[in-house]
Amino acid sequence: MFDQSIYVTRRKSLRTQVGSGLVLFLGNEESPMNYADNTYHFRQDSTFLYYFGLDAAGLAAVVDLDESTDTIYGNDLTVEDFVWTGPQPSLREMAVKVGVERTETLSRLAGVLTRARAQGRRIHFIPPYRPENKLKLQEWLGVLPGRAGSDASVELIKAVVAQRSVKSPEEIAEIEKAVDVTVDMHLTGMRMARPGVAEAEIAAAVHRVALASGGNLAFPIIATVHGEVLHQHAHTGVLRSGGMFLLDAGAETARHYAADLSSTVPVDPKFTERQKEIYRITLAAHEAAKRSLKPGVKHLEAHLAACRKIAEGLKDLGLMKGETEEAVRRGAHALFFPCGEGHMMGLDVHDMEDLGEVYVGYEGQPKSTQFGLKSLRLARPLQPGFVVTIEPGIYFNSPLIDQWRAEKKFPEFLDYDRIEAYKGFGGIRNEEDAVITADGYRILGKKKPLTIEEVESVAKDLAA
Image (cartoon, rainbow, N blue to C red; front, side, top):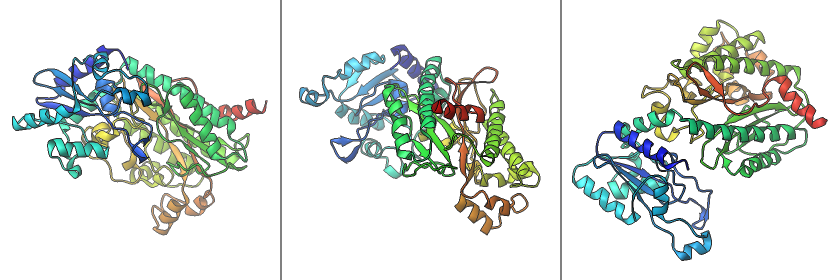
């Protein structure tokens, strides 16, 4: 956790943004894999971490906006528990570290909420994503699980998004630590990419780097020879000569701040000429997106800048045709780029996604329903302190190509005969993380190989 003053200041700021009543924060519980005592790796709720910093299961907290009090609810472990866990600090000892003086047992919370409801006081909560927290809201507040998201406090959601979106210097430093570890993860994967190596071997080695740093993974590793599949988490393939290998992996620090990087490398020591052609287009799109990153500019513009470069480059190869602006406006390029250029990042790799993209990325405005564009998670104007990913890519997904061709979609912009020759090519994505500054952006962390020459030099270093 950070210094207690940081959490005190965050809660104080929250009080000025939300009206009256109580704010209920639900921490996470342990989550069993197949029986109660065999649990998944515990991960605390990010918003609970942001305001209360306590990385323990079974906690809840209430901020009383009218009385200006903060209370943490939980149960202390017993000596019998310590046989399994070792000695643990008491709830009061943990609370003091984050500037909270009031603690109560968890059983007292239901009565507090019941009295508040009887008095007509509003109880604010954010949308729950864990089933057990939905059930708690049903028990304590009478909110049915199916309505837990729609009944959440929009006022609180907007206040949390406003605070968490702008990263403080200590948060940026923590994210930068995660990026540095993540670069090492990618260098490990790139050095292992050669014919005959299993995806699972690379994924295991990459995961080891994250664990050895004292943290863990920010999200499940994507390590695949099928780069055209955007979220391919199965590690069942084997690298073959003539192909490419895509790694999308990020570290999470002990304080739970995330990084997110992608790399695409040839399985052989050098890219083929065809691979180079597509790789250069993705780099041009990457650089175009970066040039758009500055305060006041909508992140949508960075996305569209990347889309235009992809369309222009594919026109040069004869895969696309027609007027570039019109092709992008109508979404023809999405056959090759069916996702968004980037997203916010912080305590979550897709920061605050549980609070709703319409608030996090669109300031409450509706999202596009157009294929490709509807997957853009961040479109709002950028502000100093935002941390964003930069990850345009080009993907040749055979089922999608077949579907669009059968439907005769955009024949004025797509040359399906030429595209047919690229089925089986795979996909290319490279990714960096950046913080928006007062006059532009800064790439976070140490340098990751990005250009064709830099990527190929990693293989040369291995051979040497």
